[in-house]
Length: 200
Image (cartoon, rainbow, N blue to C red):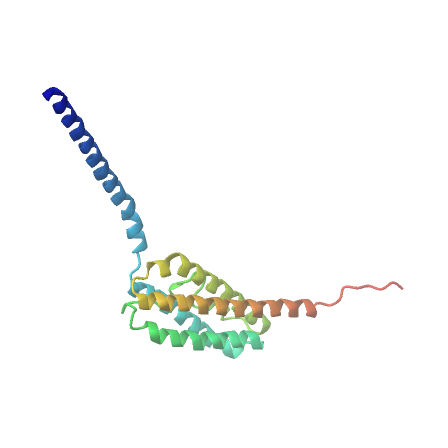
């Protein structure tokens, strides 16, 4: 009888040890798996995120100011004016959150040539087209960065709200740029000579 009780106790203890070992192993594995994700999500802190947005905004304002006087179509000029007004206002809200050594406007934050130097030697319709095309690419890159990295990495609720607002504003600016691009394409088509030949 004692033998049976002793055997049962040993089996029970072995079962408890096995469960405990499983819990410890699973916990350790979970820690290893969670570690890289946590580290990856925390690559940018709030100050760095604010700095990246500021660098994007400042590059946009700098480019808009440089080309505004040379743009020849109303939609392209209105887009440049919107960049100047919207992004300058947002900068004032973000400056308090940004690190003192945030990237410069020429750091190519959103992708492409962020400082707009590729536009310097253009004028007229060629400048309008290049500026609008540039704005579409920059805004698409910024939206991708917001969705994949900046919004998920933000810790403070204040910054998260500002980034969500920024996303909506960036999408609206992108839409305006796309409308301007569509108008340019229509004007190009209309300006093409009709390729119709009549017989003698």
